[in-house]
Figure (spheres, rainbow, N blue to C red):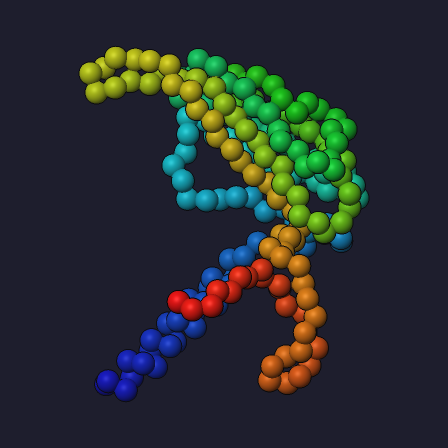
Length: 188
């Protein structure tokens, strides 16, 4: 029985790694050269507004996005704006607007961007901000500002440092490695 435990442990680890590998987003879109967009789904508590940025299409240098903003609470004010990559330009739609403050009322906008049709890393950020009525433990209400950020990214992340050619220590084959700057001190 004790000999079976390591084998079962390895089987569980292999199964878990295969499941994790199957949950990665698609590497490329149907457009060919532009990779599919990835949405940041980090595990953070949601704010008083549900803000979504959806890629509708990508045809050559044109990328069509939809902005969706829906208050979860009754708000005093609500506005949104897009932070665009430096090499993107707005072709259709608006990059900022005010939205309905009524609870569960969705405001939408269609935006078309022009950006280079390559695999370079780019990010569009939807920033929704406004004010809602907060309260403390005594029941007193006060205006509380908020800001939520939603990202949509494309392409390959840039390397943290430049690549340098060297030889593999075991085989002697030429390889490229990331050159990390270091500093050495003598002594302790």
